Length: 299
Image 1 (cartoon, rainbow, N blue to C red):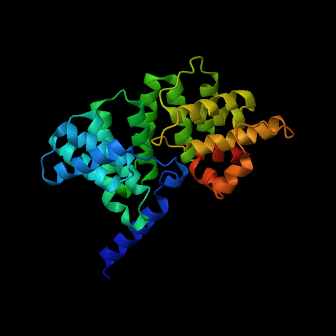
Image 2 (cartoon, rainbow, N blue to C red; image 1 turned 60 degrees about the vertical axis):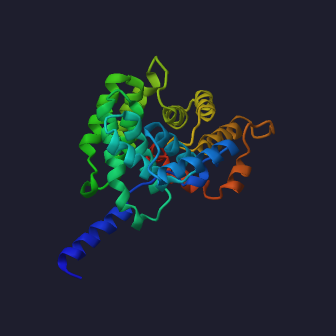
Image 3 (cartoon, helix red, strand yellow; image 1 turned 180 degrees about the vertical axis):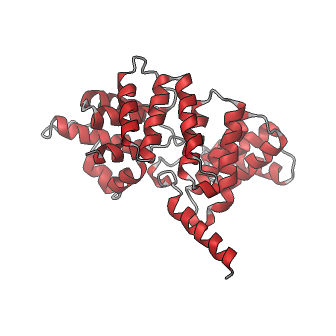
């Protein structure tokens, strides 16, 4: 192996260690297509194979493929759509999302080919719709989680936080908290946790923010009732596209309920039952809930 190859290999090992994926797919509810949608999916696949699907049919195919958890095929479809119609936010966002799903299902040593679609999809989505907080949060996570060699950029990530703050002070504060937690900037996180908690307007744009606000309310401010309220709100709005799986909030609610009254059996969620279904739930929370990890490690 030559010097250049060895250097590239070492960089690739660094990527393997540093790239952070979404929580494992099995933590999210399994999606099942209806019989009608399954038939439609087969028909659209046939049209696609024969190059007979129009733009709307390709988009429908992409959505069905994502719902069927056939993520690589979905990404292929949105790559085609973005080539045909590059200036449509929906297609670019779904391209980035499909790439993110693929990255959550492949071994890390096979992840490299999908990074370009992940990054370019969300970058184009933000350019096409600068007001989309969901797209900005997705792009921010890309810039934070990827090493610089592969497109990571902490300066750009922090700029996105400031941009979100201009649209929504609450969402901006929570974006800063997530960013500061991932980069271990304790003082910055504390500043924006307080700003988020004090925000008068508690209208959330993205569902993940409800979870993050609940974590801050509980672990940083000690307000169990407020935390429970927003954990419940998160579960009510939960979708498989959320960063945090609903079971994270359900487990947190079970923990809070046990603190309220350890004797009552009228709990909304059973902590032991969740632990039995997901034996690694505690380690998953440590790995994929950076805000709670930072708060728990504050001196």
